[in-house]
Amino acid sequence: MDKPQAIPSDELGKWEIQVRKGGLGLAVLAILWPHRLYGLEILRRLESDAGLSIPEGTIYPLLSRMKAEGLVDSEWVEADAGHPRKYYRLTDPGRAQVRQMAKSWRAFAQGLERLLAPIDSIGDKT
Amino acid sequence: MDKPQAIPSDELGKWEIQVRKGGLGLAVLAILWPHRLYGLEILRRLESDAGLSIPEGTIYPLLSRMKAEGLVDSEWVEADAGHPRKYYRLTDPGRAQVRQMAKSWRAFAQGLERLLAPIDSIGDKT
DNA sequence: GCATGATACATAGATATGCAAGGTATCGTG
DNA sequence: CACGATACCTTGCATATCTATGTATCATGC
Image 1 (tube, rainbow over the protein chains, first blue to last red):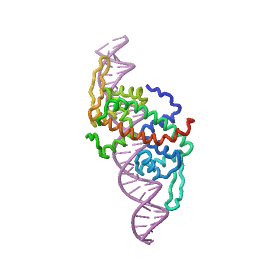
Image 2: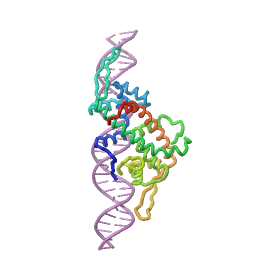
Image 3: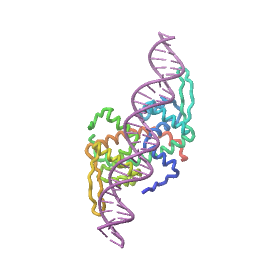
Image 4: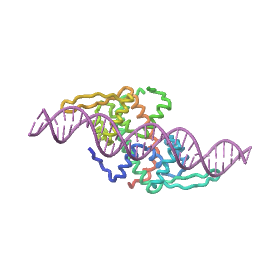
């Protein structure tokens, strides 16, 4: 029973798995869409914008992996009154990837939402 | 083990993690909401109803874990013209858990959706 | 009665991911 | 010059999923 509907490349297939698991990587790439940010700033934005709180131990390995894959690029920036910061920026392949991941994510989320519909339509007594 | 309303960030926190990662467990519990199903039938329903295709090797350990946690219950049923099937059914704690998981899932999904908004508002060229 | 194929359930090892804890370096202040 | 705050990074652990393979039951043909 394997009739993958219309998955063009196996790259997308791999991403479907990733997306299904994490969703976190997508969040990080998505928040870098409008402008570059540095490590801790990413954490704060994820918290304030999306309500996702993740620890430092998660973000740095993730960013390193993404840089190794060429999805993001980094550069050191000296702050006027502060300490050097490493800014991360989406690359062109990174932007393309975000779009693909977003698409896969929504497919998964909508499928799940379809399953959840019967649940709360019944009654909510918490 | 059910704190219907004020769930300490402990238990809920754990579920947030689970939900963030998998979402698959939620899908399985959700599809068992209306009626009991047996292993392979769960796979087929996940595929047809939500477009989620997962292998057998994933579903059985998952169901075993859920049974160990008391979220589902199982019973063998002899088919008329067939082979014995192990039917899984949601327990009461399981139903409560599904609601909680659904809530956490939606919080995460909505947060992520907020991050994705800027992306596709720009333009879509695949 | 017995071999074969199909259905259904189950297990084992490999891989990947997120997390907690701890460590290093820079800057401003007294 | 010592101290605290900001910022970045690494190691080891626990957990979850996937791939591949194994086992048991039933129906069929001879």
